[in-house]
Image (cartoon, rainbow, N blue to C red):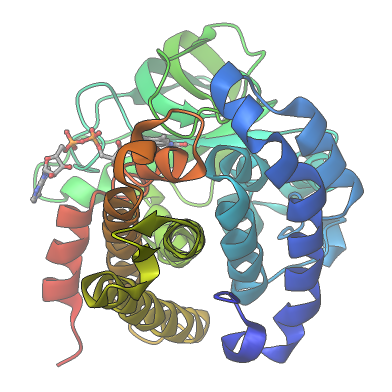
Length: 384
Ligand SMILES: Cc1cc2nc3c(=O)[nH]c(=O)nc-3n(C[C@H](O)[C@H](O)[C@H](O)COP(=O)(O)OP(=O)(O)OC[C@H]3O[C@@H](n4cnc5c(N)ncnc54)[C@H](O)[C@@H]3O)c2cc1C
């Protein structure tokens, strides 16, 4: 069964998609279950991904990357997530803090911080969410205050991918207090994780995505040089919103990979299992369930690839990105639910792929903006 065919993938993204599939078959699929069980950071798979030229290569060629565009990263995401979501997130997060820097950083920042990530010598992350809120970007309290030629950060971040493992993170912090311009009060900074006053520890174990690691970060008078401000002071929210348009299309790919895994697994199971003297797949109700899964999957995939073109062309990007993210992640959740049903009792065996997918699909509906927030964006940003 070929669900992630490349007919819908633009020509320039097909080669890297094939490379990603081969890599997933060799390095991710055989290790997925064990990594899930151990819940450890998959360092050796990350290194293999680096050797294969598939990690952090969205960084522009002039700074040492392969300059993968949105469609190429989406093609990789579908393949990696089909194989295992936790390992996939780790592979794709290595450059999570880098895209904003590539788009808005100074030449000196790009030379110092992007180049080592593209060379796979450093890892990065993006620190936005806080213990008290992840959704309200204008309600975050981590603050940066100017003191001479330094910025001093105080506050906490939560859920930060690579917050422990990264060499530097892009941090979203409050730099203003204008109640009439709530979204103009935030800025972005490059914060090296070895800066004094940066403390990070892993958050408690998760039920899904167990081969990826998130951190609770505390900034206690964490001092960074003034030149670590990214772009203009007060422009943080707007840079982040632009970045999320790309990120949410990629998260659409996370949903598609997970949905494909659920459909494959359900399909295999019902063709291999008998009840009442015939294959479970012979019952029309089961066929309708599988047909419904396929129907929703194809709709989500068409929408996500359409959104990728729209976002790449900056054509109502926020609207299309929110549509793709919401639809694909919810289709993944529904396909996993139905896949569990079709597995009967075996669905709850912890080492089954369908059970792993069922636990993983709870997560992309939340990150990069919970789907309720996406619905707000879809309503408000729909083209008139
Ligand atoms: C595995 C994982 C990895 C993550 N990685 C990162 C990372 O690398 N960097 C980072 O910064 N963050 C990361 N996050 C955080 C993620 O972005 C937030 O969890 C998410 O934005 C939701 O924020 P919250 O958990 O604080 O939920 P809250 O903001 O408290 O919202 C809880 C719920 O309330 C409802 N709600 C809230 N506001 C509204 C509204 N306006 N309208 C309608 N409903 C609403 C929604 O149902 C929402 O799900 C990660 C999260 C997970 C689970």
